[in-house]
Length: 431
Image (tube, rainbow, N blue to C red; front, top):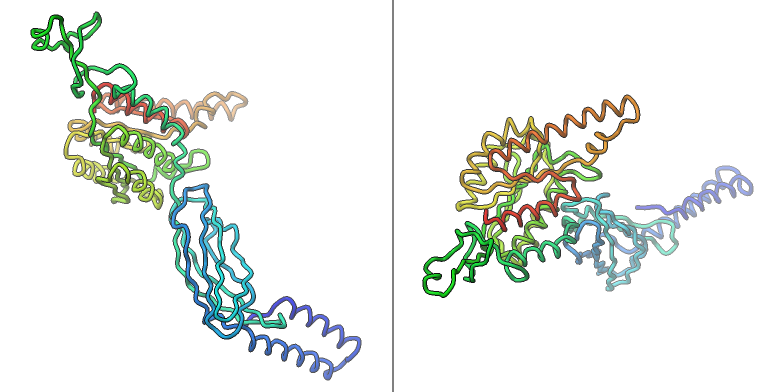
């Protein structure tokens, strides 16, 4: 049973009538009796809430920042009209724009109601329950009940770095020989022969072809295709640190998506794992047309785990997944203490077999603090920031001595910088 505001208003008016016109127990009994009759009649004549049939349809996925529409079909198989309110409950992070709806469904009829969602976080957002209040003809009271109508909307990463993709593809076309000069070097695929010109590398001379021709001939090369790229996302404790308004993991996902889109256009095969103490996500052997959808759906529910990542387990998983020489892209932190105790001693096992590229999210606030000199507190903060910068530079130098390429940039700059590092390795024939 549910009472409406109209019942409360009538109760107040009844109290005034008792106080001024019918004082005493007789007046109270008359007013309460009339209210009780009205409430009882409304409850008896209200449409059945329990007999309603509810079914959902609509969007099952949406990019963060966009709007999803989820429809609710309300069917009334009963003999009385159901008129009142319906509340479609979602968790706060789902960002439901419209949760309450007025409902008026005649006997044997059905109505479609739509709830708009603007999610505030990645991941799966699941509807909780639907509560319906059916009010009687007098509007004093009614029946109320809840239905479990499951539905899940997966909120995907926004992929804001997509805007950099056209420029990176243009550069890729240059490297691939479709828009500019072909490159030459070790580890690239043979493309064609041409006459030698001053400045060409003598190691590119094809002596057999030169013997058959009237001039010295050199080989031209193009960047290799069908390379294997393995994206490794560290979802451990360091990925939970917030840079600006978002955790480091969100910036890592955006950078990984841009690199995956670029590498798949280059004809390379891209796989992805997310790891901390165990494997959190795994995308293998996805077709080029299915790669980005597979990645964003696998990345959507990822959340940072407040545990130290198991570096040995991560490296073992990488070696198991990458059988042939690959480009292993580790998206992790650059904290000296964490790397020295975990990943750093294990990197030689990777660099002996693979080209390793480490990408880290830098905090632009550290750069700002290092420049401030306003007062004593700012000077101490600047000294602390400068020390943190020096630690990152020292760690970057140690990693490069081990043969690891390092990209350490703020969130907005990391995706294009990581894509540039991939293109530079491809142009140099190091993949």
